[in-house]
Length: 258
Ligand code: IPD
Image: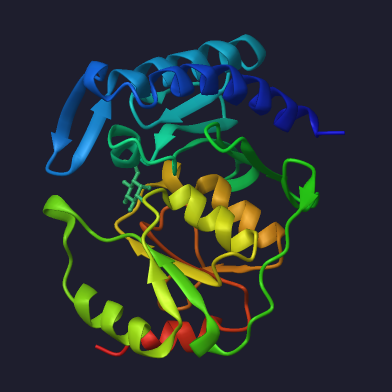
């Protein structure tokens, strides 16, 4: 049986997911606005977020909401974080790697989180202490311990956010692993680390709504989450390094060779 919070998040995500599916593939009807170079919002992002907020407000009218599109809606100390479509560029281009993200945070700790890809019908979830799951399947990070066998996810910086040293990091990781994947949804990158599909993932200049649920899901699947330099991650971090634990130290070193 799902924990009560996850049950409500599932209700909100699956209802909103129907809106997402309806608009997916309707490329010529999408209204797209650019927030900044390479950063887009579509009418679907706004409709999906409104639907999630409508459902959650019914159950949690007093909570604080941090959302990608509507900003902060101030309430009590219980906080819900929402990304209506993580992978908006994929969505715009008809690539099915998109997800709805909803997480609960109490005292700056993520306690519950879901990542839902309605196109592939994959519902990832975790509540603290309850393990990590995709639909009815328990998730476990991979067992690979040789970095050279490992597949690593990342997010390529775009537009204004291009940062120094990125090419050096990419080069170091490419030379020492089985390859890099840029999936285009940070939430799914983390869900795939938790599922043992990716062995690690790093990204800089990332927002909490992209990674909040994934942070908990990876930890509950036996993985590790830190800052890129290996220090403790917290909810103010704008970066993340995650892995199956076995390769964490070595991967961190490859990202620090500059
Ligand atoms: C983006 C995706 C992408 C990551 C970007 C995010 P959005 O989120 O998660 O994988 O590389 O940094 O902004 O804009 O599609 O919600």
